[in-house]
Image (cartoon, rainbow, N blue to C red; front, top):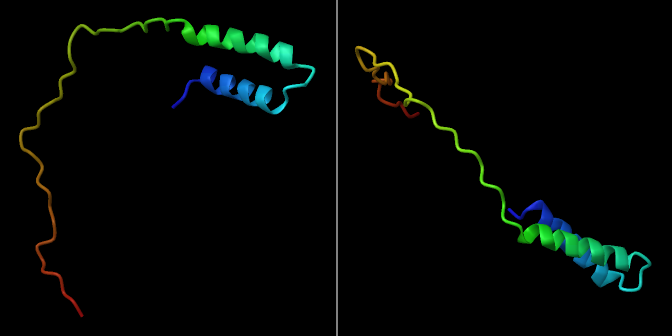
Length: 76
């Protein structure tokens, strides 16, 4: 999935392509350079949490069996 910045950049490029003589072209070109500068930045590393010990499941005395019908299927 594309990032939000890529989607914004694509929308700005579409505007500039479809409306090259619009009064907002200069503003959109400035905005495009800012969005592209954000894309070039390295993302900050996410903080990784570590727990003290792994989770352990309780063990049951007996495993539960799958009780399925022992009857044969009757077709009519």
